Length: 312
Image 1 (cartoon, helix red, strand yellow):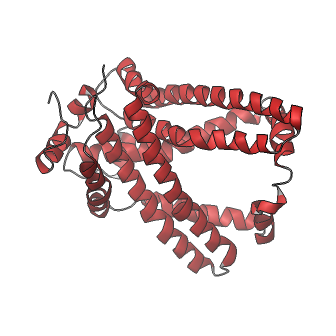
Image 2 (cartoon, rainbow, N blue to C red):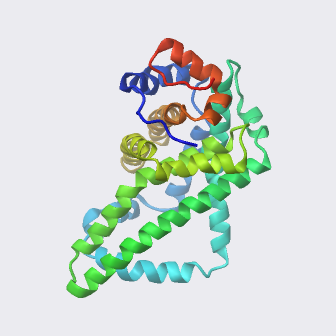
Image 3 (cartoon, one colour):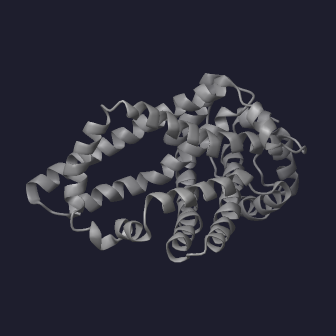
């Protein structure tokens, strides 16, 4: 399975990620489940921690001087102890379940929206998921985690040796920078794994071929890195900074919940919609995607003749 030689038209990509995504977001509305999760998070944080504790933990000055000690000493000790705890497996299972709720389940709805003109309810999208899809997503996550651990381990090793030899705090910042550089690709892997998992066509092997192309095809790698870097920046602003600011500096629970919902729900839902359209856009030249979404891709090619639809 070979990748296309040229990146699709920039104007089409801009149209898909702005006009088309906004139109579909208004048509299908936001994910109501997000509002429930916001309320749960608000109650949990205010019951478990005080505002002063949260502010102290987020204070840059409280940990910047100890950053090398935290990364090169405390973190390995913590990981070594934590990995052998009985609760570790439960934590991993919980994280996987959370990933299915916020990624695989919405991807199932988005696949139906883009495959046909009919509505796809939350319950029908959930019931439409099958065990092989969960298993495929789990296998893709295992590959992604292995690659990330390899990247993190190699960079930790040489940065640790640098710190041991010189005591330079810059070693810790370089290690963090290496993690930041790879984070957009990690986000792409987490996103694409769910979208490939819900495909109704294609074998395990075919889907893994498409998934691994993210790491071996320059066009997919660079395009995904740029898109998810932009998504991370937007999510940090609308899903983290603004809601956290409301949580810390507003006493009125109704007002801060309203502001958090107003910031998180439409922005996160929009980014999920745009991410799915980006997935279809950047994977559109591959036959497996063309077969699954031929009506949508054909419609886009009619609107924008430059759309590279092949073998439909």
